[in-house]
Length: 258
Image 1: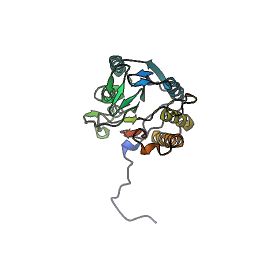
Image 2 (image 1 turned 135 degrees about the horizontal axis):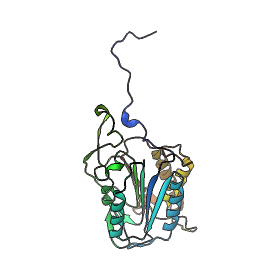
Image 3 (image 1 turned 90 degrees about the horizontal axis):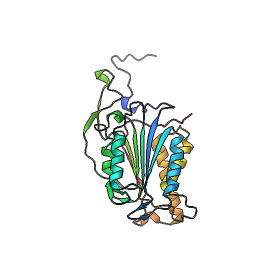
Image 4 (image 1 turned 90 degrees about the vertical axis):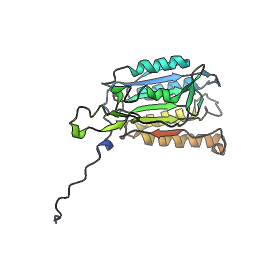
């Protein structure tokens, strides 16, 4: 029996809830900055972290650039160069910084860098060809306050005016700040608990799982590892789960490289 109600339009799915457009075989850039000896001490497991990340990201079609033991000025210069690359044909960007740090900072080999500086180079009003595309940053640092500007989503800039929309320049970022140390027993030099868990979950996903589910699983695995090695670890000030800040405007599922 058909409803007699008139003038009722079917609900339309919010456009921003459509997944990011990810193409299998698309070129993607990933930067790994591997600081093996910061002013806070050596990080003997850092090479292992870098190897795991490289293997996992290549599985998803990322061209991985690794830079080892950069100073603060070298880090900033590297970010500046990458921010000027034309990403028109790319659909995602990843930056992983493996070092030591604290609230809002991460160390080069000499001095700390504000984590906000990493983001500034790739915001939509600075790196136009990455506007509206997912940008994933993984730090060994924690959350901080960011102020908002506006930019236009590059994916919709060619649509008709009625389909265009304005987004904050900080949108489309997914950030992880981790203060979790390396494997506490460090018996097999396995690397840091979170990076190891994240890479395992990413590889197990096989291109079928949304990125937030991958991160949630990695956080759960990290919790289990640390609680097993140090009972009640998270009741102590030195052990905190990584902080995930999700500013993505759409679901993100990375396709496997075939």
